[in-house]
Structures are given as C-alpha cells and as structure tokens.
Length: 230
Image (tube, rainbow, N blue to C red; front, side, top):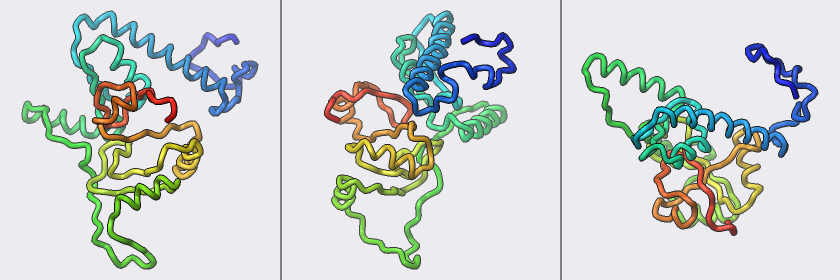
C-alpha cells in the first residue's frame, strides 16, 4: 500500500486497494492494525519524552486522549516517572474545571482546590409514589444472587461521578463470568461490541487477581488477570 504524500488531504478512497479497506472494527485484521498503529504513536511519544526527562518526577496527565488505558499503563510502567496520576475528568468537564482553577489562580494566587470524584448530582430516594414502581429494602444478598444468576442491575447511590467513567455510584453491574455478558452490556448501552467493560474489586484483593501494584480508582489503567480460570 502506498501512502499519499499529501497527508493533510487524505481520502478513504485512496486506500481502496488495501486489504484493510472496509474490513470493519470487529475483524481481527483491523484489531491488529489498530494495535500496531497505537503502539507506534506511543513509542514516538516515549522517545521524545525520554530526551527531556532526566530525573524521576511525578507525571500528571490530562486531555481526552488520556482515557486511553493502554497508554496510561505504559506511562505508569515505563520507568521514567516515580508516579503517574490521571484525573478522572480528562474530558471536557476537566477543561471547565481547569478554566475555573486558572481564574482562581489569577485572582488569588492559589490554584489548589478541594475535590472529590463523587461530587455530582445527589441521588434522592424520597419519591415513593411512582405509579407501577415496585420497591423493597436494599438486600445485598439478593443483589449478589441476581448477579450470579446473570441479571444486569442499574446501580444509583450517593452523588454522581465527575467525568465520563461510571465508578460505582452510577453504574451498570453484571457478573463477568459469561462471555456473552459483554455483548449484552454493549447492546444495552448502544455501543460497539468491541468496547470493553471494567471490573471492580476491593483494593486489598486486587494484587491477588491482577498484575497491578498501584491504586486504580478511576478506571484509567489496564491490568492482566493472573488467574487463567477467570
């Protein structure tokens, strides 16, 4: 395949002779291509950063590309930094907060704020007269049993999360033991079948399940599962 010299005016039809043309995002060939492509981009970033980073300092990341858990994990484990932090609101909501902090610094000289990822709209369960709604007292055993039997549960509790990730207060819960669950969840969310879902566990249990040694409270890092039976 010949890549046109005019990179600023690329057109899809220029690649019509490629074996990758219109193969679809679910095909193995496309997945391999996407993997190689994103790896090449990261390696270029890494080579440029390595030129200038001479001591291990913390890395702070923000911006929409930093929802890329694969890249985040590579930065975390690349050895150039002593720690890596990615804000849970790296999308447009973070831009708004950053603008406000910039204004605060301009007027006060102080850029620090107190914040919590659970700072959105609060969930109020005081409406008990919705027509046709059946409700009962929260029972964790019943919830666990429903998940074990393959049910999918909508979970709302406390204040909503800041940023695009569902982090336990506004989440869809399902047991991960059936491969078909991924398809069911993506159908329910009206998104592509290739999109992943994130596991949740106690931080104390994480080292026994995943090859991860750092906290991951905001769903922004990848980890491999240690137990092949899972």
